[in-house]
Length: 260
Ligand code: F6R
Image 1 (cartoon, rainbow, N blue to C red):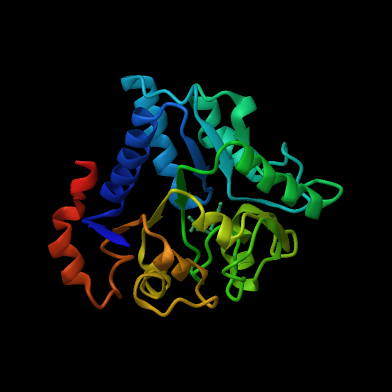
Image 2 (tube, rainbow, N blue to C red):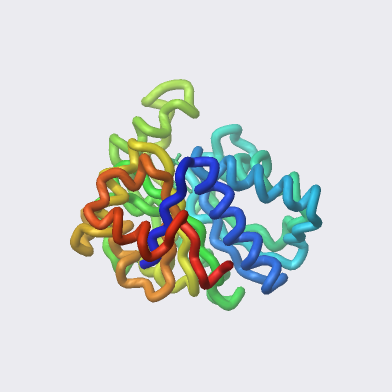
């Protein structure tokens, strides 16, 4: 696992956007795994700006989002379909037919989950999976105790995740209880994983992911098993890492010689 520590959130966001931009420039038909959440909003902003100002093109890119709430139609203002439209898709040249999110309003969510796995496989798998991390160590909506061998399926959200996401809904009771999420095993099959975390509220989860045991209690710790996982952090989210100085010695200033 490469741990890149940047001085602040803005620098971490730029570094994540550099990484994604490099992937798309080196392989125009890359298959991207995309995440939602507050952490990713500035990343999509930077990518949209680079599309507009520097011609960064997503025209041949295929995308698969990690998750969607059960029961929300694509046009629901709090759906991740809507988030992706508003934050990213409508600002770049990505072909809507090549964008995919799980169908939260499917009549048979289990069948929709299996179909989603088949679509990822038919696209040749994911080249670069972008991830955020929950305060409880979730990736996608793989909550603590999710099987590390899991595939796309319906997951029950924990109370802490619902509380964290309540701000987007009218009330806690209105916050969805279930989601379709790609599984931990689905994520681990991606050719490269890039996780971005910013802010002190993620420090415990980040420490568990990078230095804790590999455990279903912290699903992000499964990334320790991935041969090409890169974690981009700001100083606040890195604050609880025991080997902080070591990571800063290996990658001074958060630089990664593979990509520079
Ligand atoms: C969303 C997702 C989640 C978020 C995580 C962090 O697609 O996969 O795992 O990345 O909940 O969310 P924020 O960035 O809002 O703290």
